[in-house]
Length: 114
Length: 114
Image (cartoon, rainbow over all chains, first blue to last red; front, top):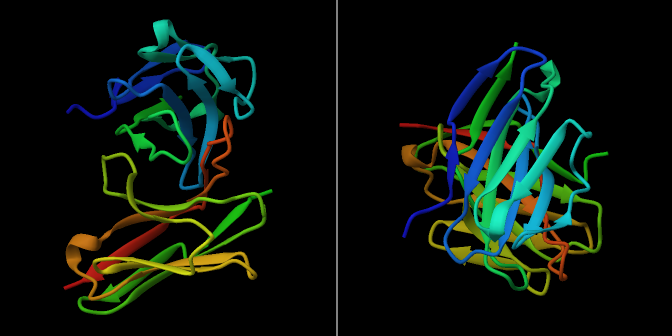
């Protein structure tokens, strides 16, 4: 069974540009999470989808970040316009619905904003 | 305010030794405490997890010790091997419906010297 996949693996953009990250969860996983790790700090929660609905977006830094999950399958995270402090590794994770189900992480997208 | 504090930030252990990583949390609503292992270029992968109704859980060479009154938990790696060299993250969450986001510690970079 394929794991969580993320695209691209790396992205280098200039300040002010737009970047879209994609996550394909494990098939059948209704929970989808986005996290971010900035420069050796802790991994921080960004938002949580249940199917196509946003369950919790309390971790989204500001309105430059937009997440969508079309049809409850793959998800995209768009940063527009990107700022220097947006640099980091963006992880996607998915899990089955249920209490305390294991979250499976993708390999991450390494974003560098110059 | 960091809800989960992890120490040390880095750790070097000789092959065959015991690696110990500690975490402390503040939110008494947390009821699920996983440890994740991350190798370079990969996403975090669940290693072992515990719930507060037990004080210890062991899986092979990996043991979680949990102290509910002190709000602390730790990971012990017995007979540490070079293949255990990785970054380890403790995390916590509440498993109630709709609030399953993981709160991570800052990570510990573990190096096992052969």
